[in-house]
Image 1 (cartoon, one colour):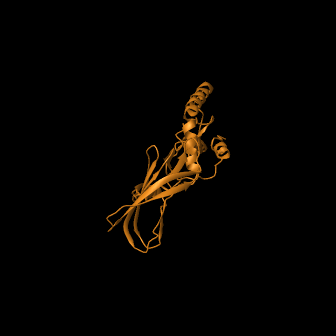
Image 2 (cartoon, one colour):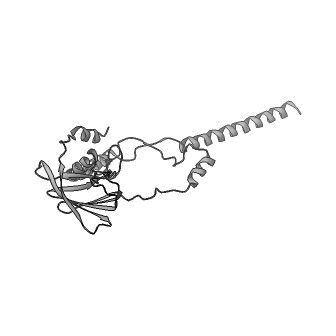
Image 3 (cartoon, one colour):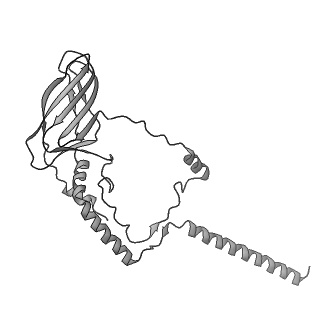
Length: 247
């Protein structure tokens, strides 16, 4: 092979390397574009401002109810305590309570430390202006075999456990409590954590009510009166300020 043949071979090899480098660069660019962590803002400034105005209108309309729902999340849940003051072992005990006056039972939705917009029935604010993180999929970052294993795991819902007490607002409040068996001088307390009692209008010193109880083996209804103390006022201002802080 002469000098010219070697020169042509070297040029051919160089050209092949150049094409390989160009192909690798192009593939790397496509991969970088696919795995980019952010996408540019697609809304115009006018569209973004219009979203804010529409959200503000819906927010103001829903705020009055949201304050009450916020209180439901901030206050401790009401529970019912039943005491067997007799020396008799009572079986299959059921208790019904009736609370008089302008009191209502509000059910708490969700048990997170702080409520979210849906818990308070408030419209979610518009997304902040600026680029957004690209959604690379639920199992991004996992090896393919592990991601497939995770995705194939069957969903196992928690078994339903009925609450100890059911609360109904009927102009006042009615409560039904399933106690079960109750030993002599024993105490039963619900632990549902779902319901908060709220007073509407003027606040009395106490909420008056009555109770009835039945037990298997007793062909009679036990009755009595009860009194529910009013809790100290709760100040929600700082909690609300923290919640609506959009930064």
